[in-house]
Image 1: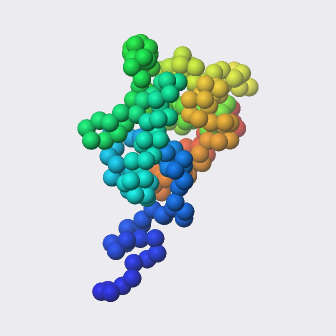
Image 2: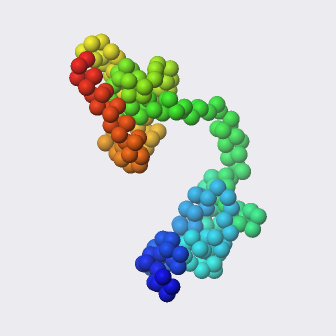
Length: 216
């Protein structure tokens, strides 16, 4: 309807807009904000972009950049502030270049495959769990994926079931790599926003696995 008023917290098109800062940052706070934005951005940021993100004037950003430049110029930092292609970026101090090259020249561990990630998820949420249970829940054989997770130290043996099957649970390395203080910090399954069909299928699989575990 013409002449309608946009809903609070949205623009004229109805798209939600970020909340504005209640009070302007102090010069020291703004310098930290600008530093954080430069750290997060994979590309150099122009003064205009920094000002828009921080909701301050461009002159204030220029002052914050000068404060940061002075901060990094004391010779005790491994990071420097550089002006690149009309923008600003944080970069490694040249003194650390050789060490950085050696660090990134090391062989990198390949990411988990889908099968490995699925197995790890089953172990994380149902531990301790046996390999046959993992296979039943996934619907496919899981020997190779479980073996790789063991080799990479993400899961470990945790005793045996009453019928002799090896049980697995996650390791401290798993919690550290995934930023968990404890297993209770794992997100709820509903946080993954499954479709009703996927949620029903997952529920059925878990129920069947629980029934089979009780019979085993």
